[in-house]
Length: 506
Image 1: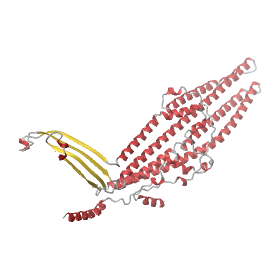
Image 2 (image 1 turned 135 degrees about the vertical axis):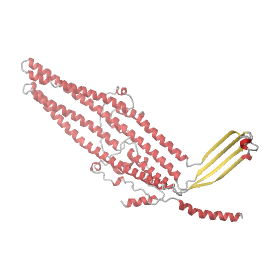
Image 3 (image 1 turned 90 degrees about the horizontal axis):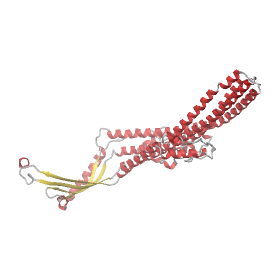
Image 4 (image 1 turned 90 degrees about the vertical axis):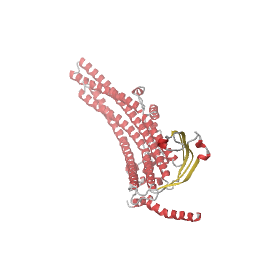
């Protein structure tokens, strides 16, 4: 008889297997539509292709090329105690903790329960005749429960990997936030230096204008000048004084801006002295730029991890279509009535053990909807990754074009300033000798002032463009090893073939 029952169990098991597999919902027709772009196939354009073949990627302390110790200290302070970076760091820790919780779910789970209650039973009016009628007893239970999910289809494993991918993306986002703060500090510092240079120009022009006004008054007193010349010499003085005050205001505002970037109050900017910027480094571009960009830009690395995470999300949604098998066991003691610790006696103990199976049969399309949402999320992540590469190449090309243009503009602006200075000195010498009127001096002085300001502005713009290029190249904050491998960007569980066909159809 026992043998006959065993054969029946085996037969029932084989009959149940196709029924179980038939009951599983179908994934037919739900596949991601996007494909991961190959950065090496993008046309970099002439601006990037003209890069020097011996150039290298930026160092993590790229701003030291400016040769200003005060700037070095400011960047260090801004990246050490900054509220924005503190928040980014908290997000990284949060994601790491979530990943840890997901990984813990892959292992065996043991839980315990203890229930100790004191119960008064109803009297005979409600309970009827019996040994517990009208008595107060202890009713206690204690149990240990062990469960282990076999994870036959990799759902738990992919949940963990998805959480880890999210943690990696958060870490890359934190590096991108750090790079943004570094770049913003450098740009604000460049503005700080520029306003000092413009203040020097305005102060120098005011001093020269005051000398010319004094000369005009002496000429009038000596009988060789006119009141008109004195008026013409004195008229620009208030405007030059206003310009000086405006430059000082800009300097103070720059102090406040730098203090805010440090995550401190305005008082932190009061101790800043005049910058001493000197950019000697050449702004060259690395070779094989598009292909290697995916590993050097923190935002691109973050977008790449996001794609990997969404790919694992598809695997998780796909695994939900298959049966779950858990191994479950319990061990406990049970006792109703009697002494407090009766439930601990061996005679009151019990145990259970065996597999527990669950599977989807009819869910109203919920599983297909979740898989469709996961596939759409993957397509969106791929599109963002694609856009991040395109945007990065644009930023690099723009910075390269701007730097080369500013090199030429700086040369031309310096030539124009030299010519304007010669014209001003000739007009000034002629006025002092009485060979020309003061109108020529005013015209040439105004032209010289504008030319000197343009030189300072172009120099500052070139420094800012260099900072922009270093930021566009990733600022040295990421390396190719920080990103996921190419095979992790594609979903598993039979979706690779559909994904490959989608690629070939494009």
